[in-house]
Length: 326
Image (tube, rainbow, N blue to C red; front, side, top):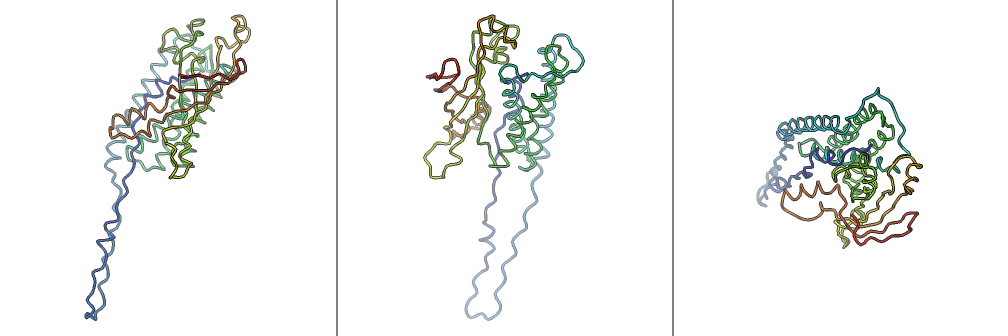
């Protein structure tokens, strides 16, 4: 079952703080003075360089408790809201259910997307709090998996669902996808993103696919598209003219999914099918700005694919061109 994208973005999207590298002015100050030629005594040895100052832990001691407390309160509130709004029906004993064949695996893409960005936010927040980069990566990298996995306990007690091993696997892969990119490149070069548009299918089964726009945003897999946006400029030479903010994007979606049962869909004249997209994306984080507010807004918005022209291929209609795909 797909974790709510709105909740996924609640865990803070502070901008990444770059560490300031110390200058080498001490080297120039430590150079020995010139000795006049008439002086026969041994030249004065240069003064030893000052030892490196111990790392400043004041930022860590100030910010880390605030970060930990805010995360604990936010996550507890999220689980409470889910338990009392989403899971409102009958409860059963914890059981497992194989939902891999359902919904054309769109929910698995959602789990991957959610875990990736929760881990990304956790790593960047730990760095903001003063945790060293490598520790922040390992401590925060699996936060997405740890945050989303308890949702399976709620699913596991729902008679219509059940705990899903493949959901857990998708959560794990989302976290690993973030960690792996940092280990390989020390940055994110392949960004998972999400986009949504309304469809006519929600009206056919509003209790499952959503009655309001907000519910459809979360539940109507027919209107969801998941993207991988590639920062090709990161692999090009520094002299390349390719703008880093412009990125190719490949997308995945599916249509005509009202029921999980093929017979029930066929009774409505529907045959679910997959959709594949090729488009472009704008990485808002690469847009220069001095505004801290805008940087944070761009950071949060970077989890979404912006409307853009796209080419779609599916088995029913073949190649389809979209002037502006949402």
